Length: 115
View 1 (tube, rainbow, N blue to C red):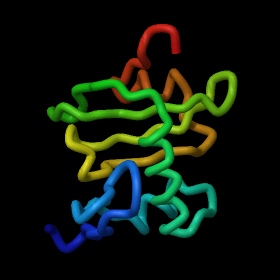
View 2: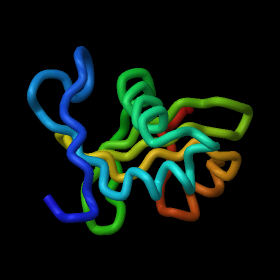
View 3: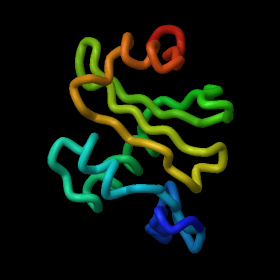
View 4: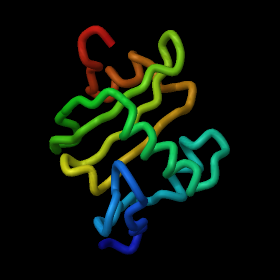
């Protein structure tokens, strides 16, 4: 694990359950930038909830295959979480007002049809 990563351990049920650790590089920084005032632990739990309840789809982004989860929270506003394919590392979780269809498109991410 790199020094800028936090090993968060598993929580009971769903994503990250059992002894498999969850890693979220730069958790505190991400929470500060995208967490809408949440503390890092609250932000992490919100990310896990989105992984468990959001619509999953695969993307290739930044040269890597990733698994993304999206939940509509307004007419053109989304909660967005990105993980590695086995869901053991969270790359980002975003819930602020800037996460729109256009924002995601500008980042090279196309939402699934019908979403």
